[in-house]
Amino acid sequence: MKLLLFIFVVQALVALASAEEIPLRVKSTTHPYGWRLLAFKNSKANTLYTSNGSLLVAVNASSGPLVYSFGEVKTISGFTFQGTVDGLILLPALKNQGESGADDFVLRFGIILSGDKKMTRLQSMLAPVWVRELAVMGPKGTGLGKIDFYNVANGSGPIWKQRMHPSGNQMLKETIACSLQQPGEIFLDKAYSSPVRAVGLWIACDGDDTGSKFNLAIDRIEIRP
Image 1 (cartoon, rainbow, N blue to C red):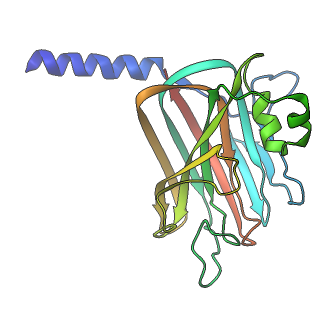
Image 2 (image 1 turned 90 degrees about the vertical axis):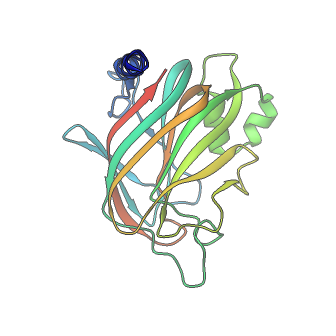
């Protein structure tokens, strides 16, 4: 029994020591490995800034993802996310979160998976901005995979716990990771049953569907090999 406990502790310490903390900084010429804020066509863009070592996303009836490229394909076994939000989604009456007109979440934390889908030049020209962004996330020759999203919902959340997003070209898988009854701390910790191959991270904070206003502070992100 003592030997098993010792092995478990050693494994836990090794996993902790080998966890990779993702830098919380904006991509620039001096920081090629950083976060970029994208904007969607016909949507007001979020605002991104840094403060005291955290990334802050300001949402005001706006949307737009933060993307972070690993620059390579990484095999990961899990992740941890810590942050704080100062408001929740203002859901319309008689609407369930996730439905058309109420498809906003304070956080969708996404792992961008490597895949085998490749686009022709014509397909790339006709594809939505976010699909084109995925296509260049990985190293040259890497195919497209899906984004594995973990959503933070309001209250009891939507009527589903997992779905393929209806307008995501079968590339956006969403899982409700947790629900908030009131604004405050967010802690997500995921351990995959089998390691996944990923090329980057995608964070979406949306308020454009519902006219919601809130601020999300991202305090720590770690991935585990």
